Every structure is written in structure tokens, then in C-alpha cells.
Length: 258
Image 1 (cartoon, helix red, strand yellow):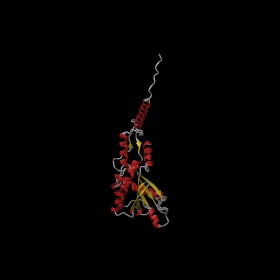
Image 2: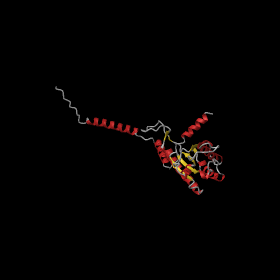
Image 3: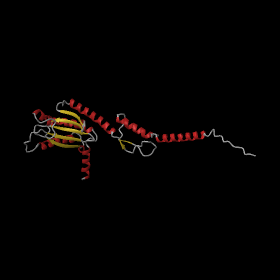
Image 4: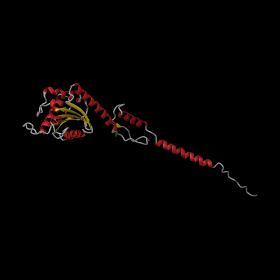
């Protein structure tokens, strides 16, 4: 008796291949989803930081984070955010400039005291004639109130800002036994203004320093009497954080050297 020939039905075999393909696609999408999963806590911290940069919240110094979680972009712990401090400091400095300018106007000092914003910070320029007599570093008693008001009403309320008091002269040589050159005169004027700010203006002595420039940092060329008068001045400079790094480093070196 002849054996019957068994014929296999392969009509449904494509279903196996299709099912395998679906499984592979499912696994692929699961992997992609897990890789792109956003860490909600870190996203909120970043969002708050950006909001603060535009003045809509408290100022955080860093974007907090860590190495845990399955976020595709992982923020290191204590990652600095340079845009936040600089943005907030710009707003602070602009408000401070307006406040000082308002004080100058209210005291009737416009023309003798100017307030300018520079890359290094805010510069309050006080003309020589409202503080000193020619060739002298002694602040006239009637003019001390101007410096004291700037110190008490403005500078003493600024936290953690270094201040420089810069003395400037014109290029006419000094002929004085007390001040042999313009270096000594500019140094004495800067120190006397500094002492007044500290003693009666409430400024922290650790945050302020005198800098004598003599005749070597003029505003305008010393070619006329009017120009020379403009160059005889004292600048009170409220330094930006980036500009005051040198002062902070000097303070640290001084404290460790004791």
C-alpha cells in the first residue's frame, strides 16, 4: 500500500514573521521612550532658574541636579548658571545708578557730581571744587555731607560689593613739601574720602580701598584750564562682581598671611 503524501499548509507562516516584527518594533519604542524620559524635578529647577533670570522669582546660584534618574540630558550637581547672576546684577546696577542719580539731583549737585555706568561698574565722579581747595587734600567741613550722604543713603545698603575710591589730578606738577608730586596728592584725597565713608558713611572697611592715579588717568586731555578742572576729581567706583575678583583675592591673601 503506497504511503499518502502529506502536504504542509504554509499559507499562515507570514503571521510568524509579522508577529516577530511587531515585537521588535514594540521593544524599540519602549527603549526610545525610556531614553527620552525627562526628569520632572530637574526640568522644574531649570524652569525656575530661567524665570529668575528674567526677574520672575528668587535668585538661585546654581541649577541643582544629580547623576541619578534616566534623563537623556543629565545636569551635574552644582552646575553654575552664568546667565542668572549677570542678569540679576545688571538689574541691580541699573537700579542703583538711578538711585544715586536721584540723590545727586535732589541735593542740587548736578554739574559737580556725575554718575556713569561702565564695564567695571558704577562710577560716581565728584569734582575737586566741591570737596577740596586747590592743592589740598582736606575735605571742607561744609562739603563732607555730600560724601556722607552717598555713603549712608546708597553705598552702605549694597551687600557684598567692593568699592574703590580713586584720586585723580591734572598734569600741573605739585610744589608742596606735604605733597611732593601728584601721586601723593591723589593718594591723600582718595584716603580722606575713604575715611569719611567708613567713619561716618557706614561703609565696611573690608569692602573699600583707595587707588591713587595722579595725573595718569585723565578724562580729557590736559590742554586747557577747563579740561584740567575736569580731570581733578575723586571717583567712587562700585565694582561689578567680575571686576572685584582681584579685591576679593587680595583680601584672602592678606588674611592668610597674618
